Image 1: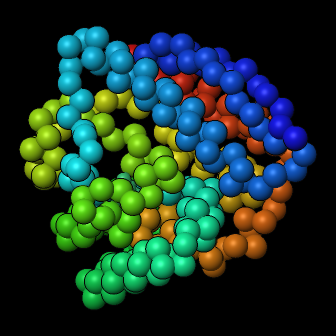
Image 2: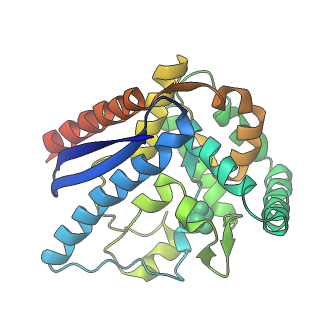
Amino acid sequence: MVERFEVALNTPAGRLTTAIDVPTGFIPITAIVPVTLRLGEEAAQLEVQQAREAGLTISCKMGCAACCRMLVPLSAPEAFALREYVEQLPADRQTQLRQRISTTKDRLTREAVWDRLNDVAEASRPIPDEELDPINRVYYALRIPCPYLEDEMCSIYEARPAACRELLVTSPAELCQDLVQNPVTPLPVSMRIGSILGLVWGTLTDSPPRLIPLPMALEWAERHKEESRRTWPGSSLLDQVLDNMWRFLSQAFQKK
Ligand code: SF4
């Protein structure tokens, strides 16, 4: 059984209205991840539309994966949802993915980066940007392709994290070859969906919002799988997601 909710959100790029089906009864956090991602994508589409109306061109297109060498952070709910997604893939696909993740882990271990990423994923306090920036830079300098990248295309497109969905640029695509040296122009993001899911999870579990680096997301989710089995009323999870969205949107309006 599902319950339908009509959602209306005023974003800086226009009004988003949509219907959302949420299971009635108790559900795990992963059940709310797809609709939360969808709301983020619909908000991003309004930004895209506004940019096009202003005469701008979105440079991002299929086959361009320059940004898939950056360190992508996931919230805990996204890491659990990614694990569920991978576990329902055919066995040979899972093996391929896990082999690539293992190769990435070996490289990051040799470069003395893996343990630093693990410390971030398991931190019992919010990590300030000043601590994260050097780790992001070291990681990006290695130019390691995301383990989910195949032939310069995302092999988990429908399950990719919010951070991957939110980076769209209007600057020339060539500039994305070096995101540290070049000034790229990203589209504004009024709601950071990973942060919103992280805040919801932090409230539910009385823990700090986590940033889980994508290469270790499966391993982290496996280690914490007991936590992912907890359930809450579906409507209450949606309320918490929407509350946090409104908070982000009101900040976005204040910045305008
Ligand atoms: S998950 Fe997909 S979109 Fe995100 S960095 Fe990896 S390959 Fe790129």
